[in-house]
Image (tube, rainbow, N blue to C red):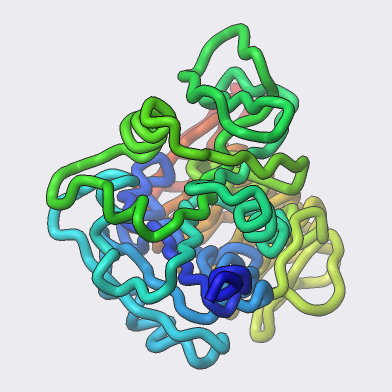
Length: 363
């Protein structure tokens, strides 16, 4: 029995996908963030493929916002070689409460928990090995980042044990941050209070430290990005296309662009920077797409420029328009010669006439 917990096959995975995705509005008005197309696949599929690749087969999704969409798409998970189950939160329970809420579905003594917003490249088997060889109660994947000021920091001692959980600060004592992937011994999930909101970062982990539980850090410098903002979503998608971010769900050639079957790209169009052109999307002659994400059915007309922007399902960008660092909602229509810059967000179905929004004075 002693070794029963030491293999991925006797590990359950839990993915928290209940968030509203407010920072990615208006795209998340119609679809939950983990289902948005990322390098042509639902974002969540990249994580599910990594979990399957690590040999974990039983996965429980903790859903809340637009919960039915996940099961409609992935079903029982058999297409991915997984056994998927779904638990829906009726009211928001936070990260800790969300983990506690799926407890009835868990079978294994070792439970690997994932934040469904993170695009990562760490070796999941390595995280599990750290957990088992250290004898930890809870193990956290910690990733080293060049600028940790925007994140909570997690220092560790010379044995890799976590010593504190620090809030965001302008002068962080370590470059190690919580990467949103945890391994729990099941009994420590049972200790989380049921039926009320709990933050695993602010409440569960600090109280475990105070009780002298063994919290281990698995530290690496693997690819890591929180996909919560349009800027990060565009960068993450481009990194997948270019092969900078790993994903077992994307076999084959990586390069400057990914054009899906059924899309039409006219001669003379330039597609660079990890651009994705979705199914049935159209790109006109002389258009320039640099780090653009075109969802299925989007149209970019002749001579238009789209840089580091997301174009929603069925949206249209008119001739010679400029869209830079913007989010265009599903079915919106951007007229010719419009200029949308610097964080502009166009709501679904909005119609902007030719030349209707400009930043420059020439017409």
